[in-house]
Amino acid sequence: MRCAIAHYHELALKGHNRDYFEQSLITNIRTALRDLGIRQVQNLHSRIRIELPPDTNMDLIRDRLVRVCGIANFSLGRVLPLQLEHPDLEALSAAAIAEINTKSFQTFRVTAKRADKRLAMTSMDIEKAVGAAICAQTGKTVSLKAPDVTMLIELLSKEAYCAAGKIEGPGGMPVGVSGKVACLISGGIDSPVAAYRLIKRGCHAAFIHFSGRPLVSRASEEKVRDLVQTLTQYQYHSRLYVVPFGEIQREIVLTAPAPFRIVLYRRMMIRITEELARREHCWALVTGDSLGQVASQTPQNICAIEDAAELPILRPLIGMDKREIIDEARRLGTYETSIEPDQDCCKLFVPPHPSTKTRLDDVLRIERMLDIASLVKRGIEQAELTELSFPQSAR
Image (cartoon, rainbow, N blue to C red; front, side):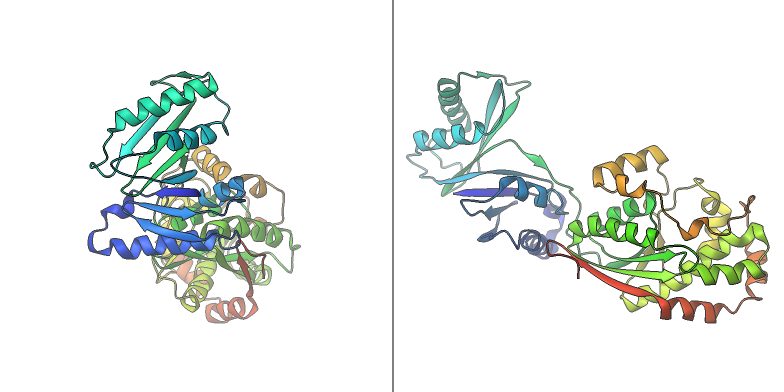
């Protein structure tokens, strides 16, 4: 029988709450694989077994499981019945040979683990017997220090499992166990990475994008939809709000001195996002701020912007430099989309010399000349909602 075995690390430390976290992970695995005819997802001790149909596309299974947050690593292989007193080494060796022959290799090693010490043979006995069979069948050589492929054999009480190597998962926590957060998302590199970092910690993200429409095209909106669809592969269902922000920016420009515009834009975005966050029952806001990267992310401006919020603002990238963020965006699969040209609201009415040390008193004085409540209400009323899902198509 073909199957996948998923391992987790952090969930094993959860004490009395461990069952809740494990069941959340199992639910997410079922969701990720729901269109692939998966028969059974079973919780074993410190591992999860996923029974696969005989004709399963293993590459597709791999692509789905590498995005299931909470999985530390997994392997794709097969399960055989096991008798503790008389293990069938011939059948086990044949299964191991079938699995390792799916790989291209010159050297290998066999690593066996016994979950039940009542097994008549030791782990080393199993390794020697299976390793000798692989050598005889394939003509390949053993390398204990640097093998091309490691043949993994897990021996449980009633069955044995073998697989040719492990595949790294994202780790972290199962999506949903840490509540909901509202992520401000642009078409840039940083904000999708920030959202992913919170998803990986078990949060379910709702997304809010501020478009320059009607003063610019929908290019940034289409780009952000693509980014959110990528992130939806990690959390399976997403809600994306697009807020037309161009006219609100124009009103700020007509009232505010040029150096303060960026901070005022951000404060308005925070207020609108917070109202949408409450609608979505979110406990925090998430931004892609990286300390000192642009004018709005200096220490003084961060403080001036945060003053507009009542909910906590989380900044998972605050201590990362641009190269680190780009590297993570590449791994995540959002980088190529993020660098496509677009017309973003952040590029509208940008002053040549924005304030980098904005005083809160100055901002509050300027905002008294704006009808803040009316502008927030307009943003909320004009917000457009799109729902996306995975593995189903977008709705």
